[in-house]
Image (tube, rainbow, N blue to C red):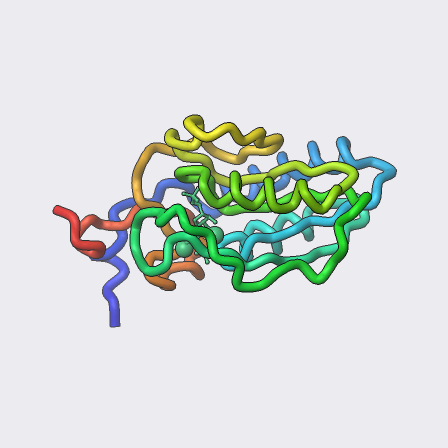
Length: 183
Ligand code: PRP
Ligand code: MN
Ligand code: MG
């Protein structure tokens, strides 16, 4: 079994800070979608924790749907090739859609996904991302709700994985480079 004490380099965002931020974001979303019928779309698998906590913090009525896309596979860098592993069950034409993501790193996943969803003619289409890395500014994505701008480190926990592990940590941590073959 893995020794978490050795794999984990540091706790970047503790659990209570994540939960405070989710409350703050949900307040903004409640205000912005007041009187509207909102569909929140979680991007599996990374967004599962933020989606579950955000949905429970919201007061506006929501429907929830999921898309599963993967661009990383087991590596630590985005391949740039986005695979749709599961599409939406919902027809989003004329719907108010809010895409919920755990992290924007290179921006490739969301840039591809937003183009894909736009072509289905939603009434509105916005993004809520818990984390954003510096490289994301290189890709023109309009992100309405951002939790934290974080440094360019490999982060895990609260939905984020390295080779499918660590998703269940209740906080955001950084991974020790030896775990993924760095120095
Ligand atoms: C991760 C993360 C985002 C995406 C961000 O997903 O959850 O969806 O990468 O990276 P990008 O901005 O460089 O495209 P991943 O492909 O690892 O799939 P997962 O959510 O199932 O872990
Ligand atoms: Mn993901
Ligand atoms: Mg991943």
